[in-house]
Image (tube, rainbow over the protein chains, first blue to last red):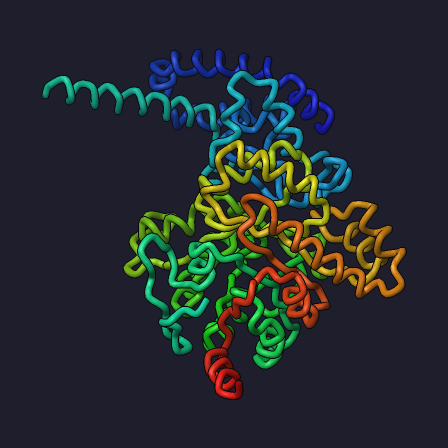
Length: 163
Length: 339
């Protein structure tokens, strides 16, 4: 919903903090997720994610959430799917070039970003969207990424310790 | 500047040390000359001569010309097609690539094909929305955005691999460009976005029409503060407006073009509005060329392409330099012999 989505941007700071906590919890529960099986979890978790984020952000379930990099304004709502900032077509009143009545997703993102502690993340270049991930849960994907990273780091430390 | 190893058409110049491409535009810019680029009007025909006659209008006045890729979301001859014709006789095109009509598979293929034909400059754009053009029913693609497109082409060139990681045996040696619109909101994000484009691989920038010089100066000052001016060549965009009415129409109907009221009033108050529009363009070029960090100018003379040569000449920015065009050197020799 458009009005809720704009509310979310106005409260980007709080939502970002909440998500950081939520993500830490999800990562901590990794052994539990593993016990149940990530594959078995995929569909129900994706459904819950879709409901929550759909309501709050008009989430399009791209499966590679970038809300923390986009001031809590979902960039997949940009008619051009821009992941890296506003196009040159933004109207002088800050509205979208394509949907005249909608505020530019990236004008919103820039506002939301200022309310977040991790505001510099909007400046990082985002990779091309992986459309094969569409519809999947980015929460679960994030947990597995963090887990994987921890494993790689610990093996790297381990092997460097040997030398 | 005379480049002594000018090519016979179809043959590439050698790539100089520190350069990414064999192109003239990169050579001119890196040599510190004030570069001039212009937008070629893409024909609505399958006749190659339509491309050549339009290109000829710029002979001796531009270092490279932009082959647009469905600009304004209107259908015209493709940028790849125009580039194929232009490179065939030695011209230096800047191939525009928009993300609106093609996905990553098609785009990467086009980049290889274009580079193989001798295209040395690629301008990576997101593209106007389909609603702006003559086929609003079309399906917008937008698989990549301008930023990931820059990264993709840079990866093809520097890592010799496709986005998938698959190897490219002979990478495309191209000079990478991007667009910038310093005049669209959010204004304070624009210099940061420029920084992102540079981080993604942009080596030169062409901007949208620049009618508001103070606002452009502000953008350049912020970009300088971010340390961007040494990392990229910036060519602000200019163009003559045929009349106050045209300017007003463009302002209201073409996405991303900002024309202040004062400009429209000046045009409306002139006796010969077309002439005034050209005069204004000359003045803007002169004013912009004085700004720190401006390396050249990009002329978009929509439906007034025949006036570009005169505008460039009147502005004096080439300082006597004659950019290459087919037959230039023979012509210069003949002129010298006559004297």
